[in-house]
Image (cartoon, rainbow, N blue to C red; front, top):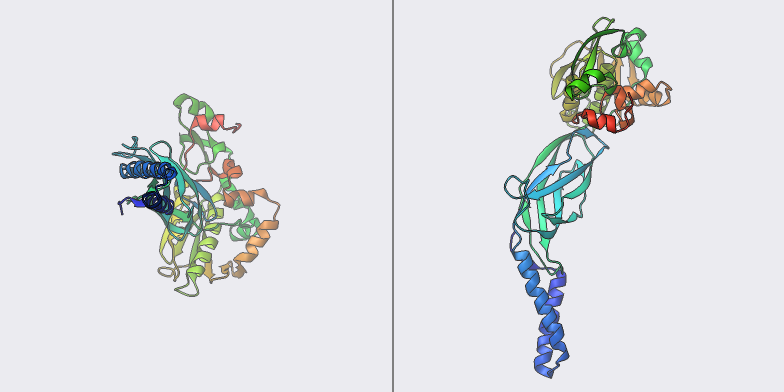
Length: 378
């Protein structure tokens, strides 16, 4: 709908002007002429201002994958052509960016001056999965608020919201692979080589002399003195149609898989919607996150021997491993009481833990200047 229409305020002003004209004709009130004239000027000016507004292009920025509960500041900039230049007309408007049920944004929209500044709002990731932004609705108005119209810009974008992740206690991980396997990725006795920084690398592995020469992040790689180990994890839900059970399954799987990857243990994961073979590298971590973000309820695709089997319902997950069974909620409670900070570091990925496991946001790659000017000491 692009037609210019009166707002509630505009209808009131129009009614006052019409009433003033009638009273002037009937009673000859000269004082009313000033009210009528002022109102008429405002109506004409407001109409022309809104009628001349043109639909802009929209460019959305600030969106990146994140975990359920995280927030992002989304910015909508406006322009002509490719959306980068200024639009042909500048106008005041309220901007609404539609989001699906898994995103919690600003339902009231953002009031901004299109063509002069972007519209920025905060969105929270409320549910895991492939979340959708768009379309964008723009409602221009005049400075008096008398007229409005509606532009709908069919601009869409999707982003992955990862399931909730929780720390896994070192006792449980140690029982799976032995205490000597825990943290082997963090043993740095033997230097191997240097390479370009990849998303998810630990910032403490940056080789600063080489980074300074190339003006790009270079990280060190270390040879491990422990044998290669792999864990197999299979997961399913009790009810093959229960989406809440799928959320519990995804949370338990991603928590365990990320903890094992942080310990340097490769992980083969099989869930109802697919399988992933992940090594303790940034790409392996991203593959696990993507699979657990998208998986639904059901049984694992195919049967195979697994070191860990996870069976989830809508309230909790049972983890079968090493001949025993433990509830996922029990592991979470145990990890919360464990004083070992490495447990939290390995699985939470908060901003303050970025040095241990790389940036909290796997979609962001910092520059050397940003790191050195941002207070990170090396």
